[in-house]
Length: 320
Image 1 (cartoon, rainbow, N blue to C red):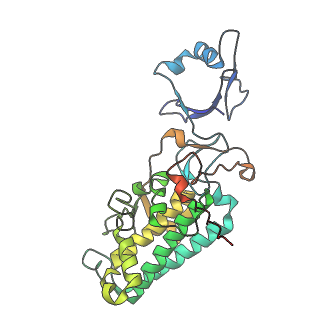
Image 2: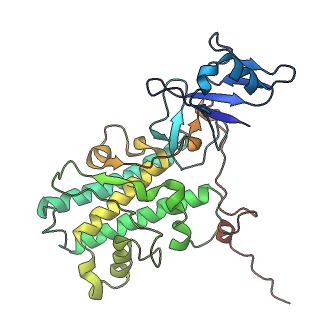
Image 3: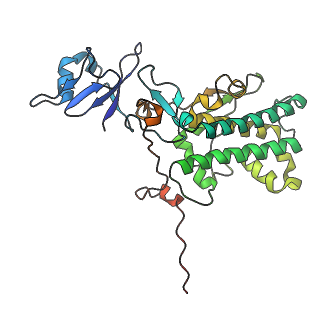
């Protein structure tokens, strides 16, 4: 159905509109006195009538941006700006935050456990450029746990959106980069103001291989399989990068409240930069969250030749 964002002015919030040939109306002010609904007339569409009655709206060009999804639709575990009757599109949001509270709480709990391990390490090694190369057993263990948690999030998003495969690889996971805007997240650490902000997914998908594009992830794989030969790669910088990736995945899926409200996580990890999504990607709330329609991002549709590869091929039957 044709839903649009109407650009009003820098001083006023944008509006959500339904516009087709027969009728046009403000989604959150249906039947309001001003401007009211616009109905088609003989020889004129609803949009033609709107242009005649509100010419000022069109002085700067077409003020409408078509939304990719209808009102109430969303992609599970993929956050986008939310526009509803009370606020303008700004914060990232996803209804999964409320519809699957047990899953979200478990993810927060694991992230908090990892953070507290990092904080204990930082009581012994003050993080900074001179100490980021420090490595040891506790740091290695933390790096492995953090990276497997990132993988858990990657897999969870894929499965929630229709991917079907027994074993996923980074060639599958990297498809989330653009869908979730992962490269755009920049994380800072108020507890350590001297640290430079970290962009944990910088360059992912732009290099030779998605496993080695991320240094911290490549180091995790190396030290996981070969502690004796690669031990020094389990360093403090990698631990910070991996935990930052965990925090980013929580926000990229559920919005800032994925880290909790005024929680240890949200106070330790500050999202200095987040994706600047076009208005066409905005979600529109449709009443109570329990009635919101789920629209899965199809990761293995027949008509998508790249993503369809994420579906395992059926095994051939053996001749008897």
